[in-house]
Image (tube, rainbow, N blue to C red; front, side):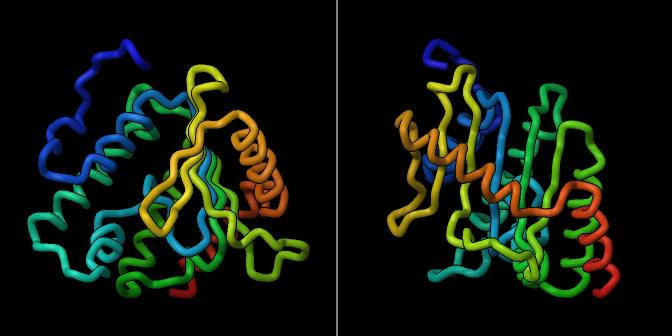
Length: 205
């Protein structure tokens, strides 16, 4: 990673978006796999443009229209790690709350659920759902993004923090996050049942 001088697609946003946006895209570019756990929002890599636009719109001060669209387009560009020719294995564990919260309107929510189901058909993508009525789940504060490096020492976990996003790369913490991910994964529905669950939610809309 230190010697790679790739100027990726994210470079077109340099000077237009905060550096953290570019850093995340570059980190993902170097990833060998990706794992997400989300409780309140659909994972960014799955978000449709309308969903992402609604998320970025809900902030104070309000973003100018051009800045808003830059963020939406950047989020869509990040999909290259799961859609492109060099797509990496991706597992997303999503709580029912994130699937039910309407960040926009009913039509946008229906489209968003359909998009998740389309992604879930790919062999390298695994979607698992944690329903509200799942017994024995006490980990609702453990949203995370885990990016696998070329070797375990280059793994990175990302957690939201009051000052922004914290990047965690210390070996003991990474071991804890890997264990935590497996605990959350074990509390979720297996992939086929998860797809059926999302289908049912979409039909309710």
